[in-house]
Length: 114
Image (cartoon, rainbow, N blue to C red; front, side, top):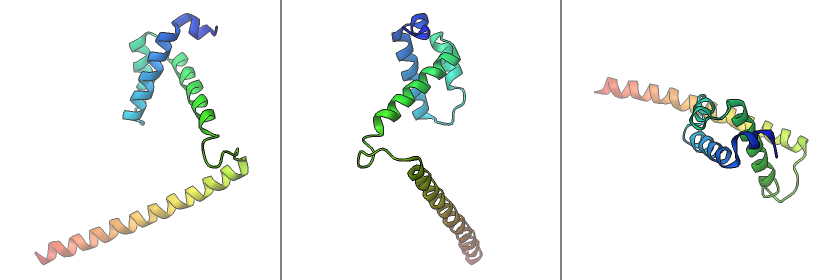
């Protein structure tokens, strides 16, 4: 049995991990989740972080075969896909900037016409 499991118990560990997952879904940018949940359940913050890291890794492992055609993606393929996604993000940001500028132009013209 792992030291963290022996010290805190599986039930407390599962509840704390579930609470972190719930709060991460509600507000992914909240940086206080681990500290607050650790205090709530009386566990160490670092232990909670390690439990979450392990849970995330297990979920990632379980999801890999289901993604795509069931083949394992090579690091080169991942890098290529990452670059394509970054290009797409940049394109969308550029388009968003154009739309913001157009909104300013049209809204100022609309205000003048009133």
